[in-house]
Length: 180
Figure 1 (tube, rainbow, N blue to C red):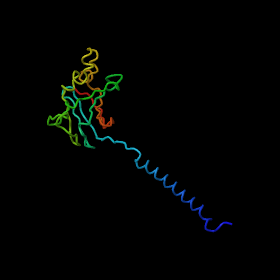
Figure 2 (cartoon, rainbow, N blue to C red):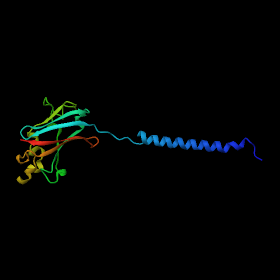
Figure 3 (cartoon, one colour):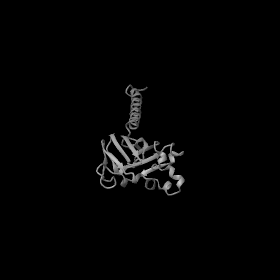
Figure 4 (cartoon, helix red, strand yellow):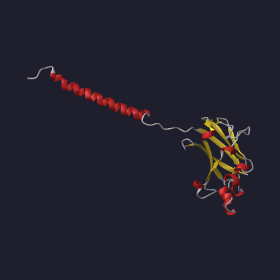
């Protein structure tokens, strides 16, 4: 014969186990939803615009968004299909020492940030084929047609791209028309 005291033990233990399982499942779901299982770094974002002329060089603007630390920004130009059939293979990085602010201070030495409202400049000399695209400029005359400073490319499009060098993610891009 069983006593009345022992008859309630099994249901209480079952309820307690179900409660523990429910709490563990809730904790796991919360960890995934809350991002506790792994962090992803978010690259900064800006609104970017710019202009490129063969005579005047490149100017680009931070039209709004995050403040960028120039040390961690990679500035690249990409050819379009109008200039080269395999445009994805025609990407050129502008060295930071060739980028300056409105006062002429270099991104390499003095300019620490690129803030909303700021503009940056690359002279026509530093945009020339011999500096920016030496693999085309130095190779042979027929490959100079791929250089942005070639007069046959006036009116064609190039893409200005800013990358976060810490994450490798794109910050912003803007299509530019090559002006004379």
